[in-house]
Length: 315
Image (tube, rainbow, N blue to C red; front, side, top):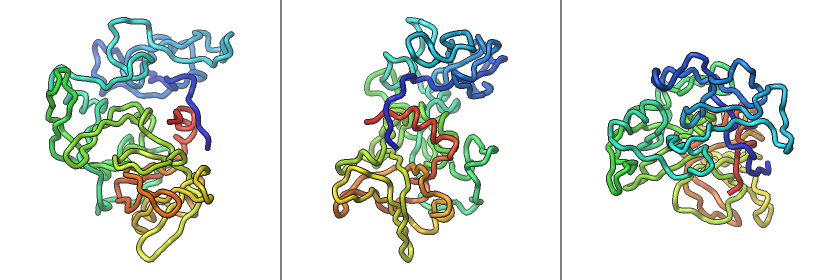
């Protein structure tokens, strides 16, 4: 599963012919995802960036042209604008977004532009039925995988050194994966012990096959499941790692019952992508991330695997 940087950073746009940012709140935007090769003439003027919601243009404008004279495939692009709002998908803007007031930051949380996580669920919720996350009727978020957490002091103020107290969620990696493309460019702030760590999956998600050292700072990783090993109460998941000496793989350990409930088992998950959050430790000749709790591990829905392959940048 070798991955390289995608040539086009804006891999899809939101299409809504009725939405006008100057008159409508972001919450009512119909988020129909359109890729450059799906573009139709009637979509002109109704395409919006999935990160900043500003208008996008398709280059070239003719939907019949899929490849430009320079050999590049058709793409989406922002309108040139020196006064444009912050957006991670504008190539010159990579720093985190800051807010002028706590009210503005709270609105960003409500609009799902800013994700504040005070913790990942440690146990399976009692009201959690088994859900097929690969089905066509996936919810945007899984309500039983997320609950209100305490307010968190988050450093997103434009004024240096000032924190805003913002509402948080106690949630799961599965909840982030359920609408993976939408969450791929979101800013995610996670309370880790006494500090708040900032993550954006499009730059901070790392392939487990590239791990070559321990890491005490928890991060987001993904990997291809190649085999399982089961014990009385726990199971080990082996993720492909072609570069470790001795032909060993990267290991995840987790509660056997949790993995069964997640559908992470031989008859369903081999060769699938696993997403997890945690530290990396040394074990034998390789590395592992042990004792993953309920909210720290998830299968990436199959429909997002090609998206991740196309957009992942090798770290």
